[in-house]
Image (tube, rainbow, N blue to C red; front, side):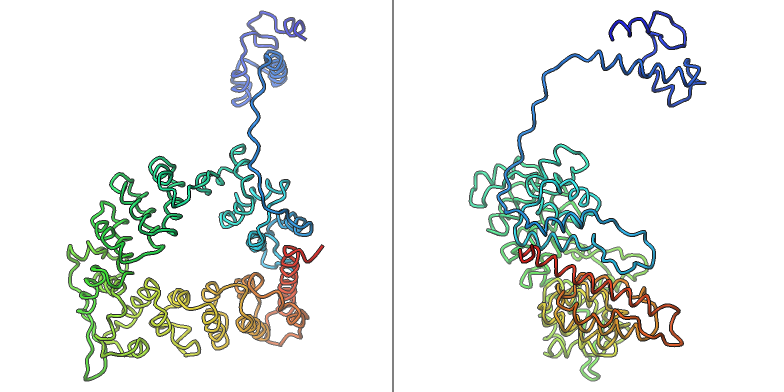
Length: 540
């Protein structure tokens, strides 16, 4: 082979095959720009020269010591998946999204069931099949919502693979310490060392772990380096104080009110306002209460919004410049009210209960602004009583809006209620008002839905079908039902899969589309039931 190459290359300087002064870079340039603009005049000569150069490059390689093989992945002590569950995972990972057409047919959307499958598998504490890890990491690479569950399930092998394949480097970023074990909170020397020398992700995870174990120790750790941290890092670290937030955090948060970063100052003010006995909460209460009074003659709430935003208000977290379309005074007023402790309002408004306060009329169109600010305060302070009062009765005519409290605000208020009460409120709302405004409310309910809520959703879908409209207007709710209804409901829903006789005023073909939608719903519920049994080891 060596003599053949030597003979064919020759010593000429022309443009044909065999030139010694034609380099690999020359060939690449000619291929990119075209042979008419380079010395190689014909495509055939370019290919011949490329073949020759390829042989020369390969033949010229000298043997070298083999690369050191990577260390093996850490042992995963978790039990393996049952065989049926392993087969189900392979099926979920090979499913591909549809074409995006309106009509989805009757087949379940397997990819949408993957997050639920991962959550259940993680609850059982299973280890993944090694041969499916590449497909799992590819799926998590394309969907950020899958990553927490997928990386928990994948375990240490995911990090090992991510170090070998740059396509999966998100696993290294998403996993604090990239697999390095954090010291126990009580190991003070190791904690301090990692806090001072660790990577940012490691430090975030460390601070969260220490905060959950000993809030005061975590705050002391943060204070030790606060003055040297970058602004964006200070903001992330400060956010960790939401866990275990207490009155002991107030002095540190008060100092953070003078931070160089506006975002840090705003977060510190928000945290302080969640402490009803803090000095900031008292200052905001004084300001908010001075803007609101009760006209005892008429029983009407009167509002006089602030006329300026002074430096002291800005220091306490009030943003002076309103967003587009908002008036300055209403913007300042809303911020004061949402930061004031809700417990300060009864005495100001005639010793009334939250329900009685919310029922009071408000003069001069200030009701929406005032109630909206109370909603934000109830969510921030996790006040169940005020949340109930602001939500009101789900069957009330104004519950579906428009009103003083928007549906988005109602969804946030619902998160302050216990799960059973939350599901009951949404179920009664749907029974009274239908599904058209219920999507946001359903999104905050725990899954699987409680039976009364599930029945309310299915009944409302059945009513919509009888009305003769197409099911596409309810595709979002139908998708939630596929993922959130209890699988035990499948048998009860079987009767809805049949095509019903269409009304004369119904949309053409609507009955068939609804039949498909209910068939897909029942099929998905049965599949979820099978997944649950497989992961519990009951099938196989």
